[in-house]
Length: 263
Ligand code: URA
Image (cartoon, rainbow, N blue to C red):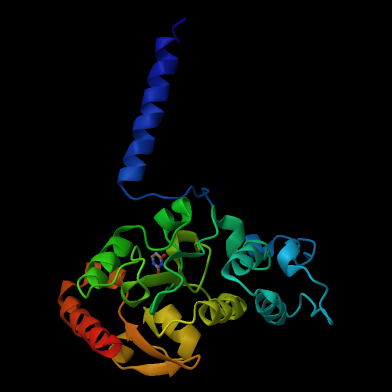
């Protein structure tokens, strides 16, 4: 049985409109007028620490009024990357999680000498559940491949491990807020301690601020510093390099500096 021509026409028109929006870069549905979800009255939520591997009874349970302390307690009980992934996936206190399709944990080789810390997932990463898979991620892969490093490498010396400060995509790709960064920082610190890389590379302002408290990646880039007891190299974010081709020259200098350090 066929469908009535006017319905079929509507259907095709709707599909064409949707395809046009996807083509134009629309990646979320918004309402006609803004809705401030932070103002909606909600029951205070109980912390979700349901995961069996991380739910061992704590000696003292920090209240939800102190989400950072709670996050620290949960993060510190994770003794493996699998436990940490489960703990983050079960952590319900960050508002960003509500709008995200996936928890984006990490990609690459956990034995890698180099850990790259990014900002937060974008639309593609949110869809796929893996960090740096969109255009910026493809550039990141090409940049590090130029000095012989890759997330696919089985060899620790030439491998990358990639994660983000925020495991959930901020709406509209806005910058994560300081309170959101502070809440997820204990997980980032635990993540880095468990991977125990030789060096950390932060790409962009958010991970620079999260690990060092410094602001201004354009000033900081290329200047080695220390964080969490490890050498840390700040670099510009590949999304910035896509928009500012002339900054690629400095990024190349930073990659060569990393290569020299690893030797
Ligand atoms: N930008 C980031 O900082 N991280 C990603 O995973 C993707 C884009």
